[in-house]
Length: 239
Image (cartoon, rainbow, N blue to C red):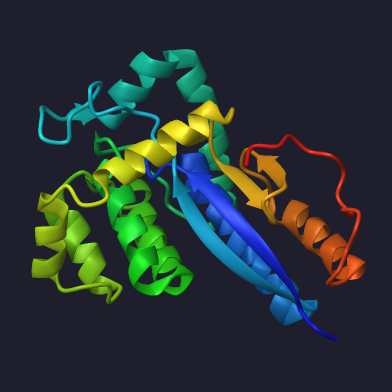
């Protein structure tokens, strides 16, 4: 049986804990469907940038703001505590040490590096890079606006040498493209992330458990390569 290719577009922001959760759950679902269920599916994944914080609001080269203070001011203390509790519960269940310590930065440099990774090596380079950036920021409390931190990550995943990454990050290469992509997504109705777009048609909003994606992938596999109409219920379009 020929494999059905499922194209997944992940719209996320590197400062967003729920985006890291979503990526964990989605990758887990993909692995389970391929290795355990052996569904006749293959996946193509591309990550698209969405910026919660503009450079006008918070400069990468300006004074640093503690992450907890930033979230409390932006969301309100009660809403932040609710979010923190839910994320901590998930992290404890999965054994993943998500932290809110450290400073907040805009994600422009990280998104630029992500788009460059896709240019250089497609999803095989982009996804490991993003996982490493998320882990550095949300598990290790590192500043992902810091060129030294990001260049180390680029070198660690084999994207480029540290010196090459520093040169890229000090340039403005892909900065306009990242900002334009983020603005375009807003104009198309994306108000929050994560969003997972399936085959360019169906959008799954928010962080979902891996079981949700497993059920979707089962339906896609059962429908076959030339499925029409969609086996999925109608969902909000965002792409």
